[in-house]
Image (cartoon, rainbow, N blue to C red; front, top):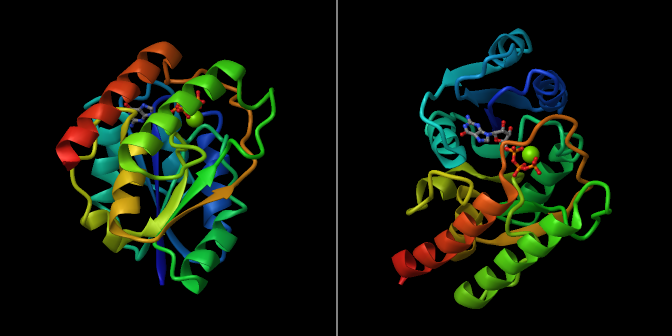
Length: 221
Ligand SMILES: Nc1nc2c(ncn2[C@@H]2O[C@H](COP(=O)(O)OP(=O)(O)OP(=O)(O)O)[C@@H](O)[C@H]2O)c(=O)[nH]1
Ligand SMILES: [Mg+2]
């Protein structure tokens, strides 16, 4: 069984090395693919030094980067997470075990259950709750964290997914598709504090994601 990790990056030189090291020390055969969009720092060089394959994706978009990365994986199990060091790599091994044992197809890591005021601001919590509840109502699903950016899943499931956004709303779309196509669960994880500048724009991306919840609902009907 082979594991493929995909990490989208823009200027993550401070943290990308530790994320790759964490994934490489899991004890599985792990292919790490970093999809980089025009970083002006040493992200690409560091990723290569740490043994990742770097794909340059000049077109901006979190979803664009993930589609490019996931189209290139060769493993049976995909692991996706940020390059900013906020998601824990040490839980990936157990998550893979759960995926194998329980015949689960898609695990999304939930940051809300164990959130603290420090790692998840009230503003983000309120925005996330509005999005998560809207998705819950429109798709009749029960979710804790619709915006989590860490997932472990069967690569085959991804190949069946349709209508995934190019922007930040890729994150909610991939969960909606996974719930539709397979056995989906959420597992609480401890989220870290971002030490560098986020690419996410809270208000712009919050409203855009809400808009795309409705677009997804129309596309799925
Ligand atoms: N290749 C690529 N990577 C991106 C793009 N936008 C964001 N990223 C990366 O995707 C990951 C998620 O972006 P973040 O800025 O951390 O967004 P977030 O996790 O929702 O928000 P924070 O809470 O601020 O961390 C990071 O590793 C970014 O570097 C993009 O357009 N292209
Ligand atoms: Mg992040």
